[in-house]
Length: 70
Image (cartoon, rainbow, N blue to C red):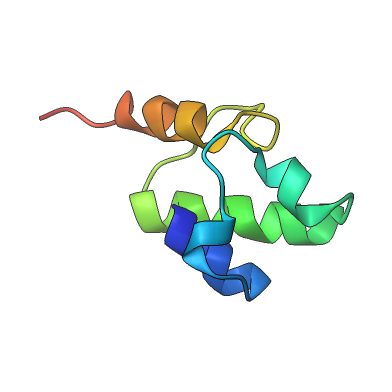
């Protein structure tokens, strides 16, 4: 997930903090926010939570874990 965000935003992986949300990273650019969420959902093959853009990345990752059955 962090790799997707870093790549899309042209940032180093170390600049992507688990405690920040996608909304924090895109600074109000809703189109970019939606693109990131779409890319993440495509990568994980699942639709994430409705409030995914507001969740810190560590919580968003946990939410996606709940969609998989092992």
